Length: 305
Image 1 (tube, one colour):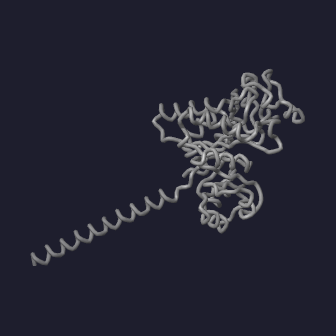
Image 2 (cartoon, one colour; image 1 turned 120 degrees about the vertical axis):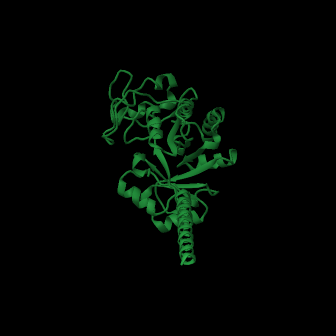
Image 3 (cartoon, helix red, strand yellow; image 1 turned 90 degrees about the vertical axis):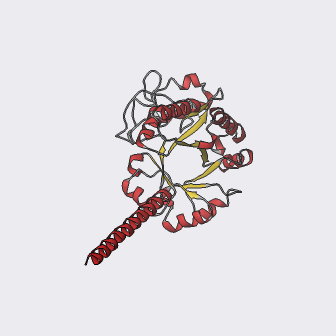
């Protein structure tokens, strides 16, 4: 009887051990799946839904929310400075003059940043007015910063708060029709941007994106090791790829151009798929189901799990 009891006890312990091992294995497998299927979240212009766009306070707020990447835009000033701004002019939607006045829509392009020195640009207020398209955006007085200043602010903030490193998605705002009107030509523009990034020592943390194929072609030739993202706002994948001579690492379309089959096809062509700008919760959930590699959003908290 004693032998039978000992045998039964041994079997029970062995069973528990197998169960624990199986659970540990399952937990480990689930962890691996979660890590490999993680969708990169990029804070669009910082976190435009709640903070002034392309501002240092907005970038730091996005980092506090846990973004993997801060997305921003750059233009050039008259004195050759790389300025973080979406438009190459003072947008009437959210910018106030140094005197605190609004800018009429019909006059906004008269404030061409390419014809203004950075000292003049910095005097305009990009946060106090708010933005009616983003009613939850907090209002605070701030300005269009230099790219180098943004990098210093982010790197110092991450280090002082013992946070995980963040990466940078930098869009070179470029339009062939605007060469030497509101921007320099691609080679000069790229050289200025890359000089800042190399001086700040963050080249390993960046990718460059643009709608302008000429920018991407010049980047590919002059800086072949830089990760590039091909931004598109319309058209089918095959047609868009005929416009470029190489395969960038990232294809970044307007999210409504995608479905699960299209995402799979792009990925089969060796490119990551990172759509823009996905803001509504239902749309965020939908593109996640498509198995995209990342999401660019004005509301990063909606995409971060």
